[in-house]
Image 1: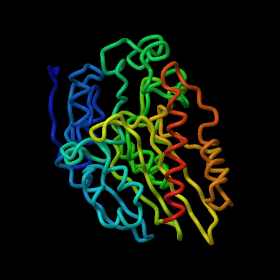
Image 2 (image 1 turned 120 degrees about the vertical axis):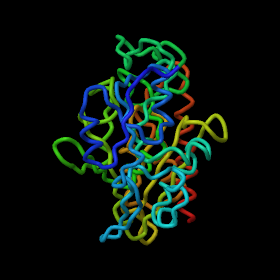
Image 3 (image 1 turned 90 degrees about the horizontal axis):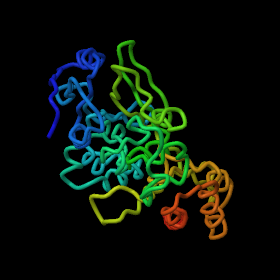
Image 4 (image 1 turned 90 degrees about the vertical axis):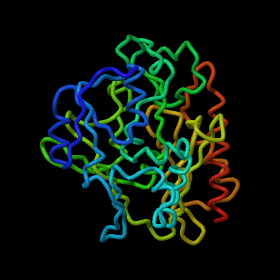
Length: 325
């Protein structure tokens, strides 16, 4: 059963920020994750603040610079089908298209997808793990086949979002509103690794909420893509995934972005692989070298070493596809 809480439905961003600044207040967007977390006691709330009636959080509009502003309450389904996103930022459209089920994509929002809590079965199952206030990560010596192979110490839960790695690789910015005003930061800095704080996922202060994501204009020759591997063909989270954004000129990669999903507590930038790709042609030797570099430093647990080969295979296949695009 859901616990008891008060419910508020503000009609302006200012009122939403004011309500969220109160102790025990949490934001409600699509609710596809929040209600489950409350039911599973993975989080608590004294007041649930619905954002559904805040007009400032809606809309997809072009910027003067050729980019795109996406309101935090934009549905995942709209991202997957929006003509401008499909044409200029296909990695985001592809990531949105593989989120959950059609029902979840229609109900879920961009802001909610970025802010969802880990799907670790220990965290969700009521175990007093590190993220729920315990002293250690239960996955280290437990059932860890879906857990992190990068950046896991001290918590090995993986970040569940598909849109996050796509937005990071596309160099998106995020606008945040709070009691002290607005700020805009690189979306990559929004996520808190467990080495900094194992009990929170987002770098948001009390009362702050995500209002929009801003995509910069795609560079000339940019090619992007997202692909994930999952246990089931639908309605499942990534065992591993790859988001790519390459700037290619005269057959050579001038700029490379590679961000992995399903393998770390935050969207994981494969910096060694990016360096191995810049300045080279996308031939078979380069692709093999880049795939090997992408898993450099991986530290698997007892039951998830398969993710190393999975990341390599996904990256090789996606690089081959972009090379022939």
